[in-house]
Length: 312
Image (cartoon, rainbow, N blue to C red; front, side, top):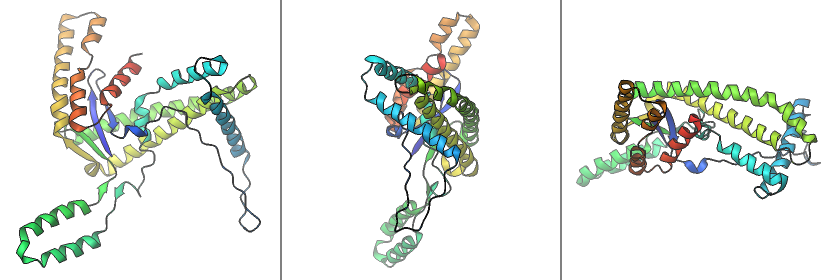
C-alpha cells in the first residue's frame, strides 16, 4: 500500500493520503453481535456474559434496528426520510483524514513485514550458477530475484525528496500527536453522550441518534488505534517505511514557493482578510499533476475537502 506524506500549503500543515480509496466508507457500518450456543454434542460451555457486555449488546442491537429502518427510507420523505437526510449531512462533515488513519488500525507486528521464503531463493541461485554460458543473464536474474524475495513492509510512506527522512518522520509524528489528542477528546464526548442518546429510544421512530453516536465512537476508536500504530512503527521501522519521492518534490515544490511569495506579499501590502484567503488557495494544477504522475486518483478532491471542513 502506498502512503503519501505532503504539505497542504493553504493550511500550512502536513497530511497523509493513501492510494486505496476503495476502502473508504461513508456509511454507518455496525455489525450485529452473533452469539453462538453450545450444542448437545459439544461439551464446551460459553462463559456467562457480564452486565456491561449485555448492556453494550442491547445498545448495539437498538442501533442496528434504527440503522436498518433509516437505510430503507427515501431521502426527505416522512420522518425517517428526514432523519436519513440528517444522517447524510452529518457524515459529510466527517474529516477525510479519519478514513485514512483507520486503515492502519489493523497493522501489527505480524503483518507489518511481508516475509518471503529465502530457502527457495538460495536454491535458485545455486542452480543458475551451474550455467557458465549465461553468466551475465544469471547475475541479472539473481539480482532481480533477490529484490523480489526481500522482506517488504506492508505499506510505504512516500515524501518529497527535498525535506529528507528526519523531517518527514518528524512531520508525521506531529500529525499523529495532533490526531491522537483529537480522537481521544471525541471518544470521551461520544461515550458521555451514550446515556442521552439512549434515552431518545422512547421517542417515536428509529433512534438514529444512538446509532450515529455509536458509529462515531467506533470511528474515533479505529482512527485512534491507527494513529497509535502509525506513530509506533514509524519510530521503530522508519528507515524501512519512509521513501523519498522526486516526483512529489517536482510537483509540489513550485506550489510551495508560490505560496511563500503570496504570504510575503500579504504582509507587505496588508490586504484585507478576504483577499488573503483568496491568495492562500492551493493551485489545483500541482495536486492534479501529482495525482496523474503517481496514479493516485482523488488526491485533489481529498485536499479540497480538508480545506472546506477546516475553514468552517
